Length: 364
Image 1 (tube, helix red, strand yellow):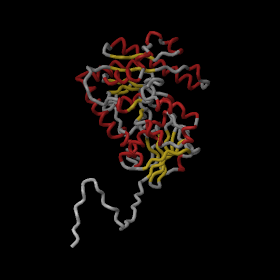
Image 2 (cartoon, rainbow, N blue to C red; image 1 turned 90 degrees about the horizontal axis):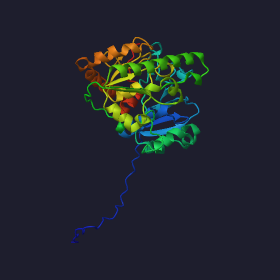
Image 3 (cartoon, one colour; image 1 turned 180 degrees about the vertical axis):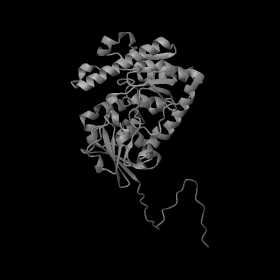
Image 4 (tube, rainbow, N blue to C red; image 1 turned 180 degrees about the horizontal axis):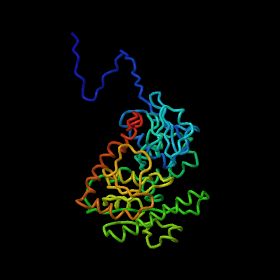
């Protein structure tokens, strides 16, 4: 009888002659079609990259002339989604060509079962180098993509360290700490002289008036606050006494100030629709005072998630609203409510999951 000696340590078995069929695992696929990479698309692209990695989904980011300038087309499970990130509440003309239309600045009267909200927008990043590797070269070669490519490659923020640029999500604190009701409102002005549109000129004048007066009234009445206007040639002329040191607007310093604040003041951006600041407050778990929200936001409720002024110009409402939040530390309850709202609607993986599964509040 032949004795089979045991293998010595380090000796490998010979490959068996028996062959097994190779298993080809087909991953589900999410395709995003864009024509260029802009800051308006950061939330979508970084959230999608994170979501696909978590759920073992193949992500393709391809070029398409059909994609809107400030939006994207998604294709998933034979379903098409048109995503519109523009400030304007005007619906895109071709939105009926898609199974679903998601819009950032969606008016309540335009809400349907297939026309749905994108809610708040936040400019953040997650693993930028990984995202670049997934992108069609035609997108990267587009001159209008240059700014976001530089921002993505600038890991240490040597060149693009402004608070308005994308922040790495890992650097945005979501801890619910009590900072004794500290208030934050850092804003910028828009020169009416830079537009020929008369309605836009009027809107900018009204917006600048609110921002200047809001800063002054908070600064004069609440010592536990950090407020001011970003310095530029226009603000130097009309708001010189409110200008903040440029160091404050650096991302690292701004995020530190945001972390140590409890109450964030916000107002409408372009087209009198919510800007990025209010979404940033929600992401970082702040109590919020804002001008009226004129677009549809899923389950974002007055007195629970925010307090509002009477109108776009009523900056004089702000002290009473702040006092209400300071009373009995009501701001702490609102901070917790907004942290929960973030986890339900704004967290990157949930944000994409809600789009792909049409999980939105629609009472029509």
